[in-house]
Image (tube, rainbow, N blue to C red; front, side):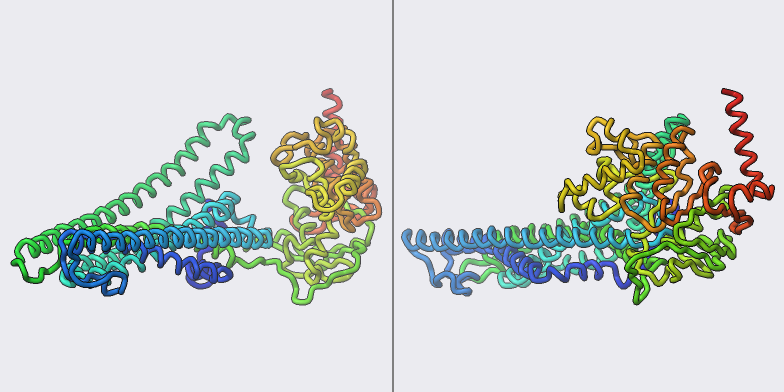
Length: 637
């Protein structure tokens, strides 16, 4: 299914299981360090509960001289009984100070340990997910890339995976914080005053239930928001990639309006989600405020109205500790709403990431792939049928035998199926019916890497990577590429790069560049001319030393002089190799061993150039039209 807007809505159904469980499954290699991080985080939270207890004990036993033992005494950390006399009170205070200092030391050490272990684990999971997703994306078939926008893929590899890392890094720790803090505070409050503890804890289930409702309410909005972001990214990527066309046609206003439309849609959805979030958080704050007032009234009234000598509902020190704990109790509870918000964002991103990982390539390795010692280059198409998606067939019952070392010229009108035919040889697509063979074996039985290593393609607009000239040529051989990258012998690698450039008639212009082979050529080779890019692509193909070579209209966008230079390079490249030359300019394939003419996906003519011209058929008509155009151009000059 196509996803033209880049939202990737079609891949969500490919998730195997719940996406967040899949995310936790990605953390399985790091469970030992995560477990230690969780234990350290729990200790951090428990250490944070000690200072309010110390405050309560100081007020009750040191300041007011109460004989009630208190929590620390029952835990065996302090002596019991009444504290009388200045020296005894100072000694008791020193003990409290030691306990407080140990609590803060424990908190500092465990906080460092928990944050380091959990955050570094989140980074490792992010790294693994990005590597796995990118690798899986690279192995998907060409039909996936034809149906999905680059901006959407970049959004998954960057913003979606980053969002998952942020969720694991921040919200996972918040979950630990909620469990440890709420559980610990609930136990301490219950110890001091069960009645007030019930009032303090009453909002906890309400907040939990409200968060579940909030999750269900906000989920569709965040799904839509992520899709809107992907569409905006796709629009920006398309416009920036096509900036030359925008400038040439002066379509600034048109593209500004298109970007503004997508940006406005993102703004509207973001503001709508923000309104819901702010309302939810405001309600939580109001609820916790009501509880604060109730405890202040009930506890304060109990202390004031309890007659001297009778046990109060709560001691003065414990009453002070209650308010210290209330702030810590509701802070993580209010974070539940934010965590719910982050959870939905993360879930939406997880659906896209694991949905992408759930996509299966349509071109797959066989169970027991054939790995040949060498490929000679015999190619045969046997009654081949092929069509993209559910559309009309592009190739219809095509049969063609090409012996090793032969040069086949492919001619025909645009859309006749020439490029599609040659893409079936390296299995960029698989046939719908019939078969394609190399050296007598169906290409579907080959090891994909071994098959493609023996085939090189030089396209009409060859893709060059941002980097140096040498790096782009070295891309044709993995060992030379590694040498250029610093692995292996760089001098030996450079010698092979220069040799390939010389064979492609590219060494002269490369040597004239500011830094020669180390010249940066810019994104997609923008700093080079069309002819220069073609010759670098030919050098790259030569370095690969393929048994089969495909030229897909490699001279259609260059001038006549450059065409002749490139044609000489092609002649050197195809020597002793099986070659398919798709030609817009028929002069390029005039010397081919055989010319095959396609029309509407069928072979309508086949033979030498001279024979086809003499037959006065489809090819002859194309040839005569180009000859007339050339004469007209010469006359006008």
